[in-house]
Length: 302
Image 1 (tube, rainbow, N blue to C red):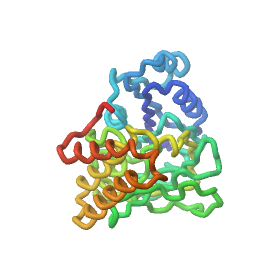
Image 2: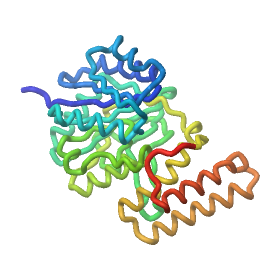
Image 3: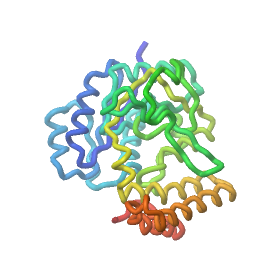
Image 4: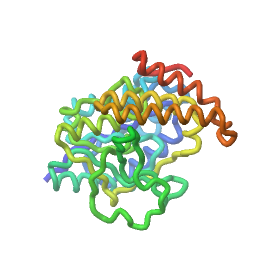
């Protein structure tokens, strides 16, 4: 019996070397029915030429512009669905996957039709036994989200069996065709950050279970410290957190706690010497809140 077809979408934007390494790991996948789709978001670093030369059997789509995480992946998702994919996976270009990752994830999902969305165990690439994400949790009372297990050494604390989680990171997310059809695609207003969290809320409200699969493994080349200090990252994380609360219909108590937290952070950065290295982010916070309030979404120039 033929295995369900899986399309893996890898979005690239001037990340040639990371993407090439990711594609090399794709060559070692043991799952027999997979199509790899590389979506290039207008790169200028020679990525397209390198992909054509080194991985000609993979599908390459050029968007011609930086459409963000949402826009680029949506183009790939539409193509995969048009080609009849049974499952569509979003995979960050700065990841390396275990050869049996898809075998494990598809087996779990085929065994339980109620499971619509899954993610693997994601480790730090530089610390290959340290967890970056074992799924995600949403604290609806505080309007905050977080990665489960982050920075923990993997000592089998999450067990061998799939576990229900609130959301899964867009770094590595596998979903059934019907979920993409019913929950629809990613919301382009986010551009990047929080888009997968909001999408997972839509998927769950559409009746699908969301699971973390510990036995499936991915390694992610991510630096939490660098992301925390990034002005664009802080802007999008702040603006899109508010957009996430709006899109999901968060209640007034949640909004109150979220805005109070932002105000306290602003004051702390202003008066406490220990946070003087964050003072430059105060203006970024104000812009993010202002843009949300005025309905300015999508990409911004920082």
